[in-house]
Image 1 (cartoon, helix red, strand yellow):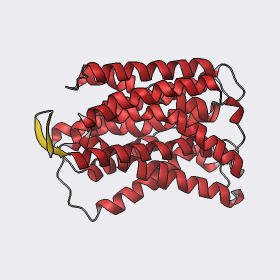
Image 2 (cartoon, one colour):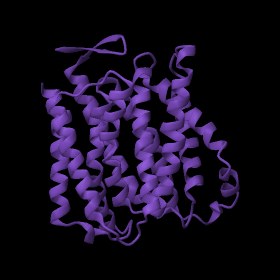
Image 3 (cartoon, one colour):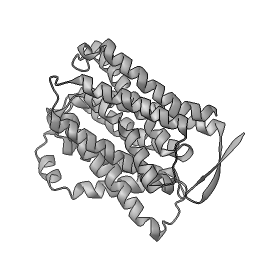
Length: 318
């Protein structure tokens, strides 16, 4: 059975299997992100400053994307889409990455996951303002319940060790920037292949990062010879898993579900962060933050999962 969708004057059919695959892809994306919040903290700032870490991440991903794109036929980009590609590169790579890593460096992994959970609310507002996305009553209630859970979870975190207001502000800007990216990239996916879109977006973002003044000075100060193998493993994971795979999977998911549904999965990131915090602490891969897990926070996470169900899975079944 196929479901016909109309988006930005383009008509296309989406099967139930494709919708399910899109949901699985988006769930894997947030599993990878959840682990990243914990592992990346072990690299900054002892071995890499945030800006250099971003440069390595984006440059490595650009090389991998172009390697795949060389074997795929590309469609010429319409002149009217130049601005959208440029804006997607600005918000989806340059601003998004800079503020996320600088925010994570100053704040905690748990705060990063919590603040990213606010992203769907931002996407909803942007989608209503700038596109034809609409929410029905059930989806609207789901967004509201999930947002309440995320907000209460944020308020319950308090002023704990290893966090800062500036870091949380940077993470909030990162979440807003990613919301812009989700909305901007949706129309491009209806005209070009997902791989072509993400390769061009990352290439533009990489060029913008090279224009960021501190990039070259901070890169020159890094002594790569002192990196232990564990740090290199984490860097490779961030480049291949958290950048290359997550953006490919996200772009695939966006082809079959709306930006609001895609963003709803970010509600799960606080849960993912806590799970990986417990796991990595047990394995000795990260500091132990298990004392932050309380019954109160688990209750708020129940609200978050309820919101995800109403926004995403209920729509799929219907």
